[in-house]
Image (cartoon, rainbow over all chains, first blue to last red; front, side, top):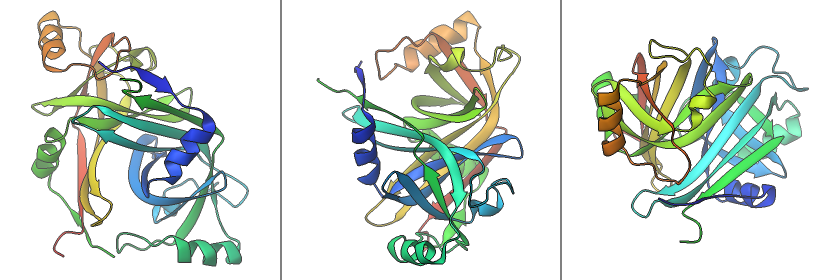
Length: 135
Length: 135
């Protein structure tokens, strides 16, 4: 069995920025929901494009809205080493045209579904663990 | 951009069983929470060992309790191919001693945290997608 080592906020955000894909966790019709998406990190805001805007509560305006979790990990199942980072924060629709254009250029959808909204997730609470550290 | 192809229930469960690790999604103090765990599939029940029993509502008895989501995926970030499976179902504490012993033998924790409970997640709702299928 491997020890689990907590990671500091900065290291967590570095790791998150080092991978292109994570999973957004939200509540949909009172049930827990999760979807893999590709992301980029702009400062301390996670940017995703998605069709899930329609699923987020209608309260998800530019000023704030639903609290979501965002998770990324990199786990080597053979070696049983790796890391996981979880961010909890408010998801906001990004409606500013300049930011929309910039993110649309930087963040291309991986699938040919309508990606009709850009969402920023504030990194309010950041936790992470390294698995198998120090072995 | 790659097409996203929905997968049938049987194929989803096959894929889920083919990997050792997934992510359990639940509600903790009214916030969305997610943790990577290792799992096994016993018929149509996902078995996980975890210390999260304490976090699940106290209603999570043998008869049922919290509705959780369980996600696994395998994504090739270079090729942008892969799959994701999401199960939504009731999480039950497994208290039957014979099943406890069996699962404790079959499912070894990857980390040296106290794994004081065994949880079964019913595969009530199963959805999955293949990414980049048919390219």
